[in-house]
Each structure stands twice: as structure tokens, then as C-alpha cells.
Length: 316
Image 1: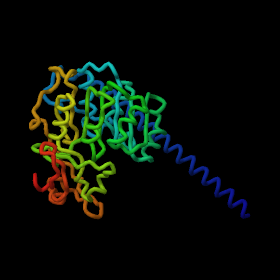
Image 2: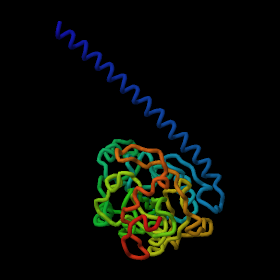
Image 3: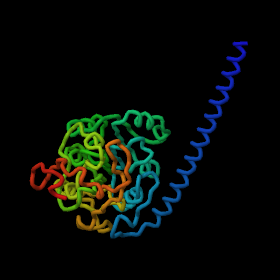
Image 4: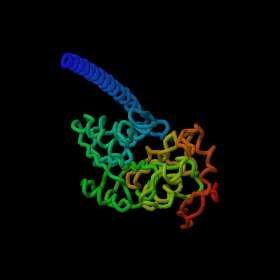
């Protein structure tokens, strides 16, 4: 009797697991079909892009990007001569929402993506895109000290089409440190809370982690002006930000043309409306960073123009 009950239980478990697998397959099929439809719709939008734009916001659309960056990137690659169709993106999490996934799938570009979370990297390695496309994936915590060695080890050298940086911390310092690749387009996150008048960034700390640096999650990255200064050092033209107010776009000077926007830094800056501030328990409090900026008033920031560290409250 015990054996019969055990066998009956095992059969029920087996049927349940089979049912779960069927549900999983259906979900994957629906997701795949939705992706196909979104890609088809996006290509209609791409074909109807204007020949010239005054703002990147005019061409925004989202397929896999967090905001409207898929559209911006498609407009740029359509209007800039980019012989080397490769990309490097880091800070991708599980890559379901990223700046280069649509580029990989729609345009068949090749690329290298990196993230510090092993669970996310394992997820990507199990994604069918790993065999469908030429994509390299690397689990690593990026620092100024290791970024160039990593790029060399992965054989990403010289000109690449796009570099996308979103690591919620040392973004400015990492771009500054990179010298083994020469991207045509750079997409990099800025901290809208840091404003547009001062070239500031969090001081470099190779172990910087946004949530550990300050409970509010508001202390990270750099101001748009800091990135603008750096872009000039590296030979890039600022062409604007996305309408969400978190990504800035730069095109290498020798690739810039009159089909791209020409904007001043003050005109291109976008104030983000994200309500991602947290309390000391780590809970979202649904307030914008500008509503809570006093909580990081005593935190140190490095002023690039003055070459010194000061407190954030000195500039707000």
C-alpha cells in the first residue's frame, strides 16, 4: 500500500511538472510572437524616419530598451557611416531590457555584453539569442583597472559601432579609462539630480555600488556636464539625451553630420521624473530625486572643473 501511494504521488508530481512545462512553452511562444510583432512594427517606424531631426525625441521608440533608446539608436545607425557593426554594453542585467538587444536581433550586429550579477549572466547564457546571434557574454565587476584588459581578452579592439555604459556608479570614470576601443557612438547614463551647471561625479571607488553607497539610491554617476567635458577631451559631439532623462548621446567628431541634432548642453539636458528614491529600509517612497535631494546633501562629489572634492550641498 505504501508503495502504491508513493507511485501515485510520483505520477501526480510528474503530471504537474509536465503541465508546468506546457505552460512555460506557451508563455515562451507568446513572448516570442510579441517580440516578432514589435520588431515588425518598429521597422515601419524606421522606414518613416525623417531625413533630419532637431531632437532625438522625434525618433524615440521602445522594443527592448528601457525607454525610447531603440528608436534613437536606429536613427543614428541609419544616418552615420559605421563600417564596424559591433557594440559593447555593460550594466545589462538579464539583457531582456537593454540598449543593444534590438540592434542584435533587428540588425544582426555582433557584440559583447557584461554584468556583475552571475544569476543574470546565467539567464542570458540560457537565452536562445546565444546561438542565434554572435554575442559574447561576460560576468565581471567592471573597474577602471580591468576594463581595457577585459576588452582585449574578448578581442574588442579599435573601432566599434556603439559603446553603451550604465553601471549606476563609476560611469564617468570607466569611459575616461577606456582607450583600447574607439566607439562611433557613446550612450552613457547621467544622474539628472546632479543638474546641468556643474561638472560633478561620484569620486572614483573601484568597489562602488549604488545601494551600498547611500540607502536612497540617489547617489551615483555623474552630471551631464561632466560627461560633456569628457566627451570633448575624447573628440565627441553631444547630440542630446533621451526624453526619460537618463541617457546622454555622443557621436565621434569625424562621424558627425548635418542629419544629426546640434544642441547646447543646457538645451539637451532632460530632468528625469523617476520616482525611485528609497527609505532606510530599502523601500520605494515614490518621490522624485529632486524631492529628496537633501538626503544626499553631505555626500562627496568630485568637481572636474575645480579638481576637488566637495559636498553635494555646496552646489544644490
